[in-house]
Length: 578
Ligand SMILES: *[C@@H]1O[C@H](CO)[C@@H](O)[C@H](O)[C@H]1NC(C)=O
Ligand SMILES: *[C@@H]1O[C@H](CO)[C@@H](O)[C@H](O)[C@H]1NC(C)=O
Ligand SMILES: *[C@@H]1O[C@H](CO)[C@@H](O)[C@H](O)[C@H]1NC(C)=O
Ligand SMILES: *[C@@H]1O[C@H](CO)[C@@H](O)[C@H](O)[C@H]1NC(C)=O
Ligand SMILES: [Cu+2]
Image (cartoon, rainbow, N blue to C red; front, side, top):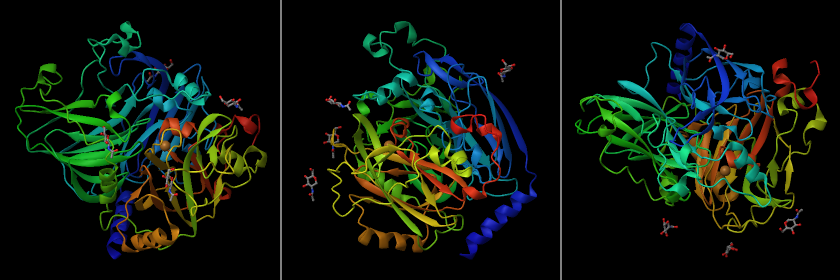
């Protein structure tokens, strides 16, 4: 107990001693033709780049990002994924929750402190816009003079994405249509924004022969990094896939996981890393293989049909391999790693369970919760629309952002009836979930007592129409949570509740901001509702949150200081002066 306090105290002291800097970034957001996987399509770019630049800062620094929305026909908003926004809840970038969207032609400035070191990300949080490629990584270093609990010779970022050829509009309209037109499996997997789509079968490129150019300058597997033999590298890996759960591995090399979502974990060596949308990991990899050749890094789809999406690839080169960086003749002649069996849920759960907080670096969870939310995840039909619902409520964002409506008591702007804390878990059969009696699309929200400890148990189910159960990575804004456990089947409060209490008491629970809810299973997390504001908690799959798979938590909104006028301008906030 004393050791973690000591470590936290010394980190804070070091952070305070170092001079905090302010980093200014100015971003022009535009649509651009990009051929990220050799197929030309419109992408949303930051200063011409998609994915956007990696932002770097040091713990305690302030980031000031001025966003010019130059999209002409589309709103935007940018979320800083994993940054808790303590004291700046209006800078969370979640359209409909913490701000009005940034209108075409308008400028919005995000200003916030990066209070914890670690690997984070940013991405669009307006409609399904992230699908169009508005995303990137955010790396926060420890202050000078603070040692990390592992050593490495160099570091690289690895951003994993999935990619479609139809536009974000077609995807969104399809999902909202009756009957629903699903977005389908991704056409490509991207690593650091690059992939190679097979242009040769004409039917594969939607008839757009000219759009698919296997010989374009952008078309080729990217170099992930060039290693010096014997050296150890830190890879900061983040997934911003829109649909896919992935397995990432590097041919011939093992990886040692040392960080997850900004917290150190007890090192775990793996052949492949399962990574779910919204998660980040740091892994250490030592260049200890034959330096006369190069190696594939690969991402493979798991949990969904992998046969429709070829593996994402990038090349790990050795400096000794004759240089020529990027030359195709240097690409490995081996096939890329095939990845694990896509439907081997047990090994994914086992890896999720294998992570433990590094002793001395993570505060242990409070002993017990003040409130328990049992959240049932179901897919249902509402007025013939296919929707995801949580305890029967399918979330839709109100015209007036929750933060403004709640802070200014605009009660007509959202549903005042709180969503249910639980469901009938006794009679539930997760293979055949009944349609909830209260099923509705709503702008409801959970109001949490400020400072209270909240447990959330997410319960997965089977989708009645296709008899499948999917993986849902749940992401919490404004907080990190302790992961108390993963279970298979149905959560039984009388049996599983006491086990969670024991886990909490034993210590070692990892802290994260995103956690997987595995097929036909449950996942339990605990957090302290101590960050004044209004925060989204949602499935990180773009299609799912668009179909209502999220909830909203409010805590201490009355303690939030005066809201900036820049977040207003929509719904009831139009023309109001606060
Ligand atoms: C952003 O757009 C403005 C106006 O067109 C231009 O002056 C500026 O150079 C652009 N900035 C960048 C970084 O592209
Ligand atoms: C997993 O998928 C394969 C086909 O890829 C199938 O043959 C096998 O039966 C499946 N296993 C389970 C447990 O569903
Ligand atoms: C829903 O779909 C069914 C079958 O296609 C149709 O008969 C019914 O009229 C639709 N209901 C609504 C409310 O659109
Ligand atoms: C749950 O539903 C499945 C699928 O309909 C059925 O096979 C099973 O017998 C049910 N289980 C119980 C305990 O009723
Ligand atoms: Cu989901």
